[in-house]
Amino acid sequence: MRVSREVACDPGAVYRVLADGWTYGSWVVGNSRIRRVDACWPERGTKILHSAGVWPLRINDVTVVTDVEPGRYLRLRAELWLLGTADIRIALEPVGHARTRVTMEEVLIAGPAKLVPGVLAGLLLWPRNAESLRRLGDLAVGRESQSCD
Image (cartoon, rainbow, N blue to C red; front, side, top):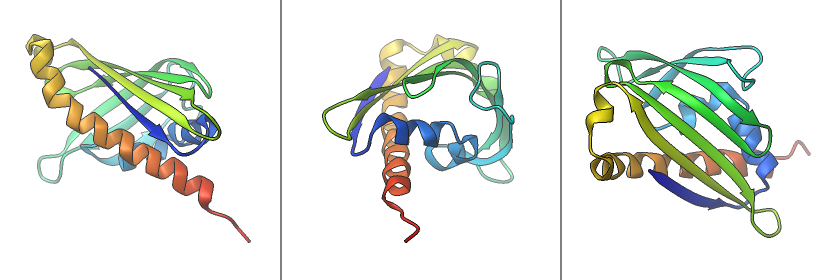
């Protein structure tokens, strides 16, 4: 499942949000809080411990960086509690002057969720990931437009 969005800032601005693990709960739909971010996030092997849902139905999950090229892409393995594991790739591509195409690809790779047919999984994930990219873009643009004058 792949979704893209064009954002009105350069790839560096978007990457700075991705590189701040404490923002993860602000732009990833379904995450309710961040419990811990490894100090060297987003280096390969580092983790974010987060929770999904609302009390009392909160579930603790973990996301691990499996590959990264600063300013270009971030690849994650998200543990989705009993549902399984997802491989997520977020790519940043410059488009014109100070614009970025952000593309998120998510593939269910393990657990019961992997048994969901690809088309159905795409229908379920597309709205969530489209909203996540909208939030990511808003954070990136908002940070870039702030000034300390």
